[in-house]
Amino acid sequence: MKEVKVLTKILRANDMIAVEIRSLLDSHGIPCLNLMSSPGAGKTTLLEKTAQLLSGTLSLAAIEGDVATSLDGERLNAAGIPTVQVNTGGGCHLDASMIKDALQNFDLEKTDLLFIENVGNLICPSSFDLGEHVRVVLLSLPEGEDKPLKYPAMFLNSSVLVLSKVDLAERCGDSLTLSKANALRVNPRLKVFEVSSKDGTGLKEWGDYLRALVAEKGKEKGKRD
Amino acid sequence: MKEVKVLTKILRANDMIAVEIRSLLDSHGIPCLNLMSSPGAGKTTLLEKTAQLLSGTLSLAAIEGDVATSLDGERLNAAGIPTVQVNTGGGCHLDASMIKDALQNFDLEKTDLLFIENVGNLICPSSFDLGEHVRVVLLSLPEGEDKPLKYPAMFLNSSVLVLSKVDLAERCGDSLTLSKANALRVNPRLKVFEVSSKDGTGLKEWGDYLRALVAEKGKEKGKRD
Image (cartoon, rainbow over all chains, first blue to last red; front, side, top):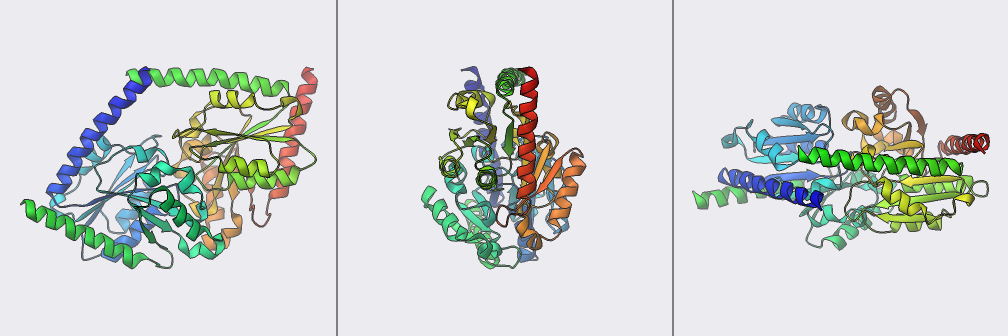
């Protein structure tokens, strides 16, 4: 039973830090999205496209989580998003203390929107509150339509689903329709975007959604000030 | 420091069971392959195709690991592979005790070749010895060529790489060449298969490799008997 007690303790400590992070971001009117998916579903590429979409209108920032390398952090920095790379050194998820440390590197007064790109893993990250406001799960069409059923916690604990690589729809049979149906079967409240970073499908809707989040968060902050 | 001690203890217990499993399989001359990958890289589909390839010549068996559902176990049973489904109920990997329990459901005297299909996860499963003889990592082209660098432990701890979904090569730029180069950079000893379960590319080579494994294991058993 000892292992269970230790795990519970870690989770509680994580949740307390997550509350602290959310409160800090709220005080600056910054919405934060935690992007999660299998490896290679297109999280970094979506953020590169998001930087282009919102360029000149919103100031973005990102925390990039990876087991190893700073490849993705370099890509985001090159795309114009100030990014802090967090390497877990083998760890399979980010936790709130990593985010708290990373946040010290940003000027929050000059930030409108924060992205956390989690480690590529459809299981473990769903158990860790990072202080985000929105949990986004990406599912790329080539992964197959059964994934929401086989990895239900990730889809149940997210509020947004990005179906990515929809340019491959004709190569993937009924994967688009079935992936969406299976995800909504697990979690009927999911807000769904159908996106291809390659041909641009759905990027306008994604950008509009992000702008609305920032506007809403700013209003909330205004009411408190 | 307490958490580290507990983890070490669990790993050691796992390794002792793994040794026991390997010894049991050796005594029956059964090679065992542990298939690991991101969700949706094509492990189950490759096993369905393997069943067709080896049908009538070898008796296969499989242990199917998933967080939830018995979808994949049902597919393998339908393909003619006697399969035991193991659900981890949220757990992100299989461990040796699960394999030991599952093995009780097979007639090992009538089995030539055993597959373990691990939970879809490119991180955690690589730390757990399941008593297999060969660790196989699958990497599907749409996942992107950077994955071996970003998830090095999985590629370092495997001896076979199956590059899957190569029918999508022309849609994925230089992903085939670069994925292979990056994997070999992490682990130059990897034996590489380039496979498409959809159009049949590379399946003959994969089948020949499996037949050779079984022949070799049988010889080893003969020498001991």
